[in-house]
Image (cartoon, one colour):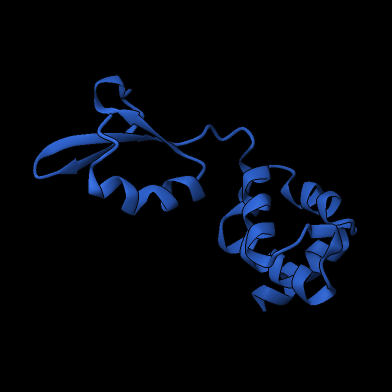
Length: 119
């Protein structure tokens, strides 16, 4: 992998935020995303498996809001639900229940926050 390529340092924060990793062009698999510069594959990005996706989304929201979900204020918990919703967390099976557990609130509370967002 060409660690010195200027494109890599530019996209590294995005790749990390998505939970992905760089893979040498020669080692890429069909599901990897090739990163092309001047017609050449410089590197590939391997995205994480769907398994653990909700945990990664929660970790990202906690990073963005500067605290663990159960420790957030009511307003920040509402912001967390909005961010998770915008990032597609609630299309995952059992996401409402898992987010409620992670947040230390009831499922009904999460549904109420979601309903308020979608009104």
